[in-house]
Image (cartoon, rainbow, N blue to C red; front, top):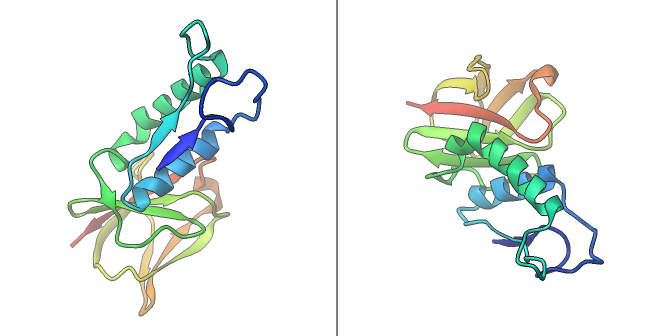
Length: 158
């Protein structure tokens, strides 16, 4: 999947429509959830340097990946196609649930058929409740656990 830092496929001094770090990280996560690679374009200025606005954004994405990269690097698309609320990625018997747009409460993940051995929040390792239903699973996510960009939940499968 290809994306630009603003609206242009090269340096364009008048294009100030920069995408936020949140938008770009969430686009990358959704791409991973579809099993796609993510190509982020930034065109150099005439002097060969990258615009400071783009450098700041790239650094912030890099900082997010330093903390959460395990849930993206080396993964494949998860067992559930990306949904309005987010996406899933998988590495072996671990499924990463990326909650991108959800206010908290019971999150229904339809079509999740695997048996879950444990569920925890990626950031602090605290556990959360998982309920199996005939439609899939339900994760109870307290509102105070919701992260601004991506609430990552780790599901270890049986």
